[in-house]
Image (cartoon, rainbow, N blue to C red):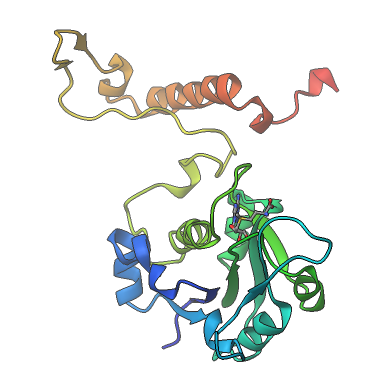
Length: 238
Ligand code: SAM
């Protein structure tokens, strides 16, 4: 049976995959065939004897740029249909849970991992390539960003998480708030320097309604404090 989600990865470092995705839930899901990937080495599509994949930028400046002609050859040789094609890039649309939910519905995704200064713009334009960023900072290559995007998508695939979490209650899901705090045994814990830390009584009360209300209030308070941008608009301020 084909995997629910297949990733084509265009990279200069195919050995970076599956990386962290070979462990835990995503690793088991890979073994079970729930998701699959082909990591294609862009360098195999270079045509000169030095296997060159980059060149200096027109207009001058520091660094090297990945060549459109080499990238095109790699893209067109993909063994599995490319589907939505994404260049991981700091200039891209910021990744969030809504985008992840949307991407996880795809059959195939192609992820282009940049290196050096980035990719010749003509390649991105000619093949309608979307750009997605994993945050406002600069990595040295797109592979870790691809692994993050893949991880977030894979855990949403049916059969991957089982009972290990309640997706609607997680941060950014369901009501879109940050998640409430968690506690586990022991109920009373003393730190190495002698401070005694207890668990909020309500969580041990057995009253599910009150626990739900407490958790929601905690979620709201945390979101208000840390990420007010996630709160729904206040109708009184409209
Ligand atoms: N010159 C580029 C710029 O200033 O926008 C940065 C290039 S970066 C050194 C090399 C590669 O890392 C990029 O082509 C991209 O694939 C990847 N990368 C870096 N930061 C990223 C981010 N925040 N999100 C996604 N990919 C990123």
